[in-house]
Every structure is written in C-alpha cells, then in structure tokens.
Length: 238
Image (cartoon, rainbow, N blue to C red; front, side):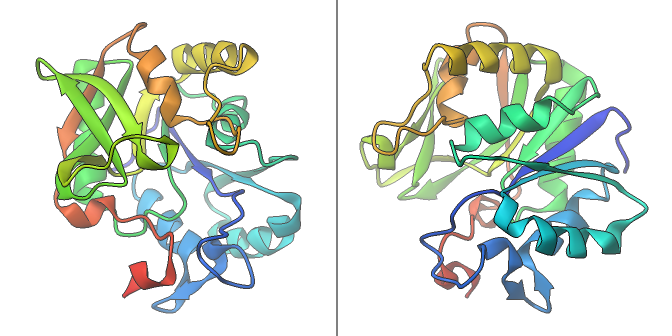
C-alpha cells in the first residue's frame, strides 16, 4: 500500500565503527543485496518519497545503488559533519514536503512490512504527534518506559541508563507530524538539549521526552522481536 503523504528519511551517515567492515555497513552484502537495498526494497512498497542522509565519502557509492531505483523520488543529502542522528533527521526534514514523515534506521533490515503498515495506519487514524512500534524483549539496549499506559521516556543504556532483564524495545522506526517535530527539533538542537553524554552528538531519541510535552506519542505492538534487530555487528546477520 502506497501512502502519498508520507516521506521516508533514512539516516545513513554513521561511522559503523562496531560493524568492523572496510566500508559503511550499509554497503555490506547480505543475501546478495546491500543493507541499504534491503531497506529501500522494504519502504518503496509504502512511498516513493525517500530521503537518505549520507556523508561525502559514501555519496558516490550510494548514488550508484540508487540508480537502480530511478522511478522513485530518492534524494541524497549530505551530513557535512557527523553530529548524530538528531542532526541527520533535521537535515532530512528540511526537504520533507509531506505532512507526515517516517524515520527508519538504515540497519533495520528485519523490520516487517506488517509492523510498518500497522504503525502508519495507527498514526493516520489517531493523528498523534508521533507513533512507533515496540515489543517486549530480553536485555534491551534501548527501552521504552510507560506511566499509566502512556509513553514516558526512551532510555539508552549506552547513555547511562540502567540495564534491565526485560523491557519494551523500539524498532528503529518512527512516524510523526513533519512540521511540528521539525520546529521542536530545531529548538532542542539550538539550545543543546539533546546532546549525548559520552560523544556529545545530537541524539534523536533524547528528543522524545521533550516532544511528549507538545503532543501525544503513541506506540503499537510490533509483529515480533525480530523487528527490533538493528545490524550493529556482523553477528546480528547470523
């Protein structure tokens, strides 16, 4: 099902330092396709408006891959300095002309189309500020807290969050109101509200606790735990 009023943003300018590969992990071939092709093949079922954020070093190689998708409106934008996911999302939002935007991490190749469709459908029906899928898993690297069944916060263990044995994990997939989130994100970045403690990068996930003050954030149950798998290490593909 195509959604005409949705733009997909894929932040893909990271260093991929944990992946241990000669190039960016988005160019790693898995089942005869690069990781970025797996993502593109998944989302072109839903929209032909796609924005990829990349660094200058990988721009040429990405363009060669995108040539296979010429009938789709893929824009490639450059993140001059790797300032973090929040900055990458902001760059993408400058070119998102639709009322709604979807952000999907470039390594979420196992995210199911069922979960994608259900999340967008819930967003369209309820019209919250943001909607994203979650599911309970063991030892989540990132987990979502709820208070009285409402979204409270999203915690990252690498940022000093307490490790837990079981909790709700996100799936690296977020649907939101373009204009409202763009305006809020710009202010948060301007006032340095969402910098990570360790790397001092601009973190998109840290913005959620501020976003909830401006509108409803809804979640939906993902199809399976497999939806949460981000390819951070080679072993994640086994």
